[in-house]
Amino acid sequence: MRRLNRKQTLKVVKEMDAFPKVPESYVQTSTSGATVSILSFVLIGILVLSELIYYSETNMKYEYNVDTELESKLKINIDVTVAMKCESLGADVLDLTGNSISTQGSIKEDSVLFDMTPQQRRWQRMVKTVKSSLDKEKALQHLLFKTGFSSKPTAAPVSSGHQKNTPAANACRFHGTIEVNKVAGNFHITAGRSIPHPRGHAHLSAGINTKVYKSPSGNMLVVITSEEQHYNFSHRIDHLSFGDPVRGIINPLDGEEKLTQSTMQMFQYFIQIVPTRVNTRQAQADTGQFAVTERERVINHDSGSHGVAGIFFKYDLTSIMVKVTEERQPFSQLLIRLCGIVGGIFATSGMLHGLVGFLVDTWMTRVRGREEQFSNHMPTPTHLPSQDIPLQQLDREFPEQESPLAVNLISADR
Image (cartoon, rainbow, N blue to C red; front, side):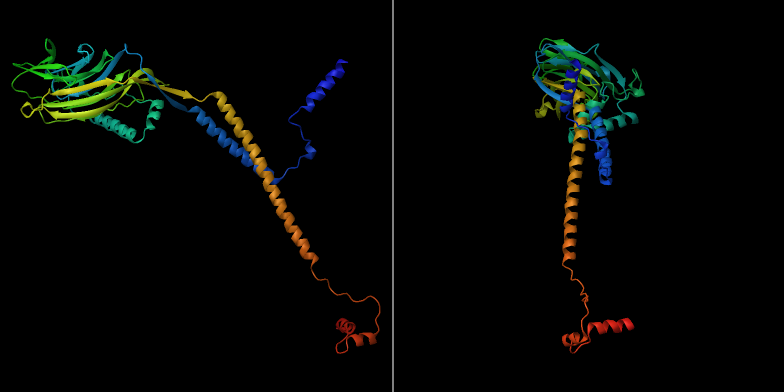
């Protein structure tokens, strides 16, 4: 009884087979079918290889959210060289709340040569070439995020002139990282060291005169100077970034160089920072991308151009945070695409082969039909009668002509 039930069950299961097997005696191979099969295999191999290459690559996903981390700190990474000696310059940060943050201990000052070495010149040209390409082709930034690009504060090559206490040094290099409050402010390099002052922010420059000016952020800036002012604020920005240094981000001011012949020149950089959280194979960090607007002018109080000579980086932050994530295609999606390629090509090639075969058979059938129709309308040759016909009857039927029999006889004699 169990064997009977088992056989019935197997029979039912066999009847549900959606892939019936065709006996080999019913299968007929052909040259055209073999050609289509070879082409199908080649096409499948090419498409499968392209899918594997596409699977090995990654995509960059961008998300935009409101920045809620207002209590966190903001890092300013800087590497600037000014064409003046370090004892004549001072650098610090003044934020929107009026707090002055000293750079002592966080920003290093090295006496260096302002002229660049050939290696530094090549690095500067390379950075400018990449930035100009980014302006023309925005998709290049995706490639930089994937492959990584050295964009650290010390990315510029350091020459032998960047050693401290060099006798021929004619410039000062400010480099390092300083943490500030996550509010608008300005980082500036100007003449003299910063000192506390009851009327605002002050810089002391070996002086006998005291002048009060308003800084670009709106705070009072007091500068104590001497009568003779011979300043040269020509500078080179090897690196300026905000947040954690991240490979793959090209900063707008990297590699910039400003030269001036004026002794009272003000350089202003108005920077708009977009907080960015990067999560790629190259880096995982909280950084900041930014756009910058530049302005420079000569300070001349007699003509109404007031201010303080120096280099000012005025920055502000947006309320939107950008999240950059590097994603890979799921493995399940790869399997689905491969199955679709193999099944689709086999099904399509089979239908095309059947359609072409049907058209060829139809055309050959019409050609054979025309040939048979043409052969049926061909005239048949005249046969001689099989019975004996008297010569008198032939003479009556052909009075003026030779009889066919006579013609045939003559031809035979000849």
